[in-house]
Length: 199
Image 1 (spheres, rainbow, N blue to C red):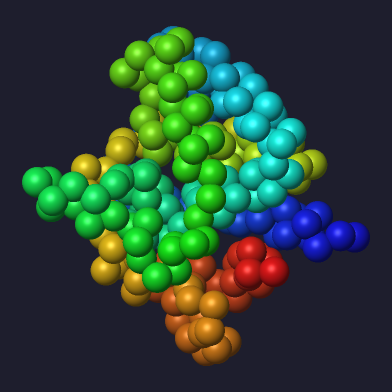
Image 2: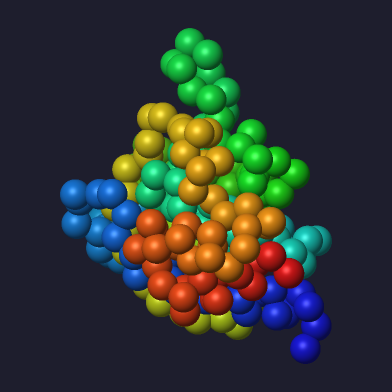
């Protein structure tokens, strides 16, 4: 099996693990959250990713990884998408050490958001777009399929410091990795599945 297929398979495991976690939200998440307000959101996300991944075979793995890097900081809240804004006091997570020259797919997330906004203006959160992008990427890569719970709210803040603290650096030893994952409520099995992203 090629290293790309192994990476995609490992990243698909990431999505399954992240999909089962409940990150800082009091809201009731539901796969049918947009059934009355934006019933075609899933097909829009699918169409954009399918088209974009034709010219970039690594894109689907990158979108799953982007979702992981978002969720590991302060929950699955799209805070990784926020840019520097000194007037709002935002220091982007994109500039955190583990994200520099590492995260990819932001342009495709913007394409998805534009397509969704054209169909359902002001309805679907960026956090849900990231979650759907990870789900669709897994399915298009012949990975696990599931109905992602929707209804997340977007963060109004980013936390570069927390990104530097929480995201596992590539040089961490096994003890340090286990500790980082335990803090997130994950176990050694999750660590093994998610570590496939490093290859």
